[in-house]
Image 1: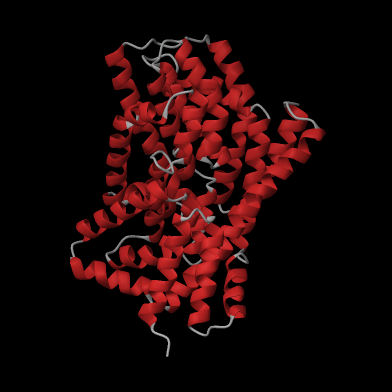
Image 2 (image 1 turned 90 degrees about the vertical axis):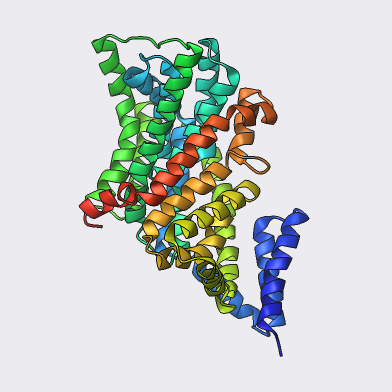
Amino acid sequence: MASTSVATALLLGLFILLLLIKVPVAFALAISTFITAGYLDIPAMVVTQQMVRSVSSFSLVAIPFFIVMGEILGRGGISDKLVAMADVLVGRVRGGLAMVNVVDSMFFGGISGSAVADVSSLGAIVIPMMEKAGYDKDFSVSMTIASSVQGILIPPSHNMIIYSVAAGGLSVGKLFLGGLLPGIFLGLMLMVLGYAISVKRNYPKGKKYTFKEGIKILADSFLGLFTIIIIMGGVGAGWFTATESAAIATVWAFFISFFVYRSLKIKHLKPILASSLRTLALVLALIATSGGFAWMMAYLRVPALITDALIGITDNKIVILLIVNGILLFLGMIMDMAPLILITTPILLPVVTRVGMDPVQFGVIMMLNLGIGLLTPPVGSVLFVGSSIGKISIEELSRGMIPFYIVMIITLIVLTFVPQITLWLPTVLGL
C-alpha cells in the first residue's frame, strides 16, 4: 500500500532535485507530479484533467491581452513620452532624475505590468540620462530596478491574475484595486530614499519647464497614459471585468500606436504577436503544470500539514506573518516568480487566512516579496537585466542596492501590518 509520507517526500524531493540539475520549472513540476501519481496508482488522465482545468479559467483570458498591449506600447515609443511626462511633474527637485525614474516606472508599470519590461524599456533611456547628468552608475541602475517592482503591484499585473487563479478564483478586479495604493506607497518610499541620497551626494536639480511646454508634453503623453485609465476606471467603476478591460485597452494601444503616434507600422505586428505568443506559451505551461502539482499537494494534504506545523510553532499572528514573509523572501531569491506564486499560494494562503489576513492583502504581500526576489542574486532576473543595460557588475550593483533592499523591506513590513493600505480602495468601491 502506498504511503502518504513517502509520496509527499517523492513529490517535493524529486521536484527540488530536478531544479538543482537545471531542468526547466514546467518540466520539473510535470515530471514530479506524474511520477508521484504513478506511485499512488492515480491514473495519468486524472492529473492531465487537473492541468487542463488550471488553464480553463476565464480570468486567464486577460493575460494574452495584457501581454500584447505591453508589447505594443513598449515597442511604440511610449517609454520616451512617459519619461518626459514624469520629468515635467517631478524633475525640477534635487535629484530630479531619480524622482523621474520612479514616476515613469509607476506609469509604465501601469501599462506593462512587468518589472523586466519596465527595466528593458525605461532603463535604456533613463540610466544614460542620469549618468550624463552626474549621477553615480550604481545609484542610477539601483533606482531603475527597484522602482520597476511597482509594475508588479500596480495594475495590470499578470502575476496578480496568476495569483487569482492559484487562490481559487479570487476577484481580479479586487486584486487590481488592492495593489494600486501599495504600488504608489512603494514609489513614495523610493522617492524619499532617492531624495535623501541625492542631497547627500549633491546630485543636480532637473530642468524647469514653462507652463506651455509642460502642457504640451502632458497632452502628448496622455493618450498613452489613458490606457491605465481604461483599465482602472473600467474595473473600479464596474463597467468592465478585468478581462474586458484588457481587451479594450489592447485595442486602444493598437489604435494610438499605429494610427495616432504612428510609431509602429503594420509590418511590426508580426514580431509583436510572435513575442507575445512565446511569453504566453511559457506562462500557460507553468500554470498548467503548477495546477497539477498543487492538486497533488492538496491530495496529500501538504498545505494542511504546513499550516498545522506553523501554528504549532506559535499562535502569535506577528511571528507567523514574519515567518511567511521570510519564506517568500528566501524562495524569491532562488526561483522565478510565476511558478512560486502557483506553488506557494495553496500552501501559505491557508496559514495567513487562519490568522486573519485577507487573501487580497496576502496577494499584495506575496507580489512585493517575490518582486524583491527579482532584484536579488542568484536568480534575480531584473537584477541581471539592469546589470546588462547599465553595464555594471552584479557585485557592484548588489552593493549599491543595499539601501533599496532596506527601504523595500520596511515597505513590506508596513503593508503586512497595516492592511488598510491594501484594502481601503476595494472596500470604498464596494468590491
